[in-house]
Image (tube, helix red, strand yellow):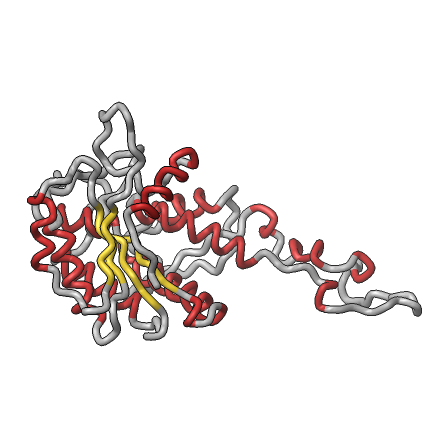
Length: 301
């Protein structure tokens, strides 16, 4: 008799937290899982018992079956009588940890379709809750850029976040197309193409804008017929040479696509740091960056 294929975990797992669940279950069941639950740890371990505090105390009852007896002069209940549940917050927190472990390689690639599905689920909630004319979506793609540099042999084989698919460029573009397919044309969409920012340093320094231009051209083709509304490209602080910008001559985007160059950096007076500090802007630098941005630009209208 053929062995059953795969394992399905119903949900509750008696471990202390979500990270422990993800790590232990993944190690114990390699290549067996179609999906992985967060284990319902902490306050969620008692089925729906954690919902009790969301209800008015006068509705509580010590056992089932039974009914809560309310005083005759009770004013009744409204929607506000029941506090919001926290399933969404718990799910989003677990998902955040899932992504971190996935990016670290702890969660195996076999789960990628389910990860993508969760991304799309979240996107659909956003699209439902925010009118298209009030919404803009930006895809940040630092690891994809690093993957492309890896494909060009600019990184060693033991680099963190090494891509698990080949060919890398087509695999990246296919994933971008999938994630953009459900976004209505009325919603602006842009792409942030950068080299990451780890403790104020790029994961790898760009040679020039050549790779980002090629990547942008590929994205434009991948998501047509919809338009790319903007593309943001990194410009290291110490690169003001013509050679760095020369590849922009090959940029083939739509006429109404805005090219945004990350030119604004805090003016570090000692002149010793020549890498981008764009991913996380220190609050004390914000006024300077905003002032420079205003001084070197013109109003939109």
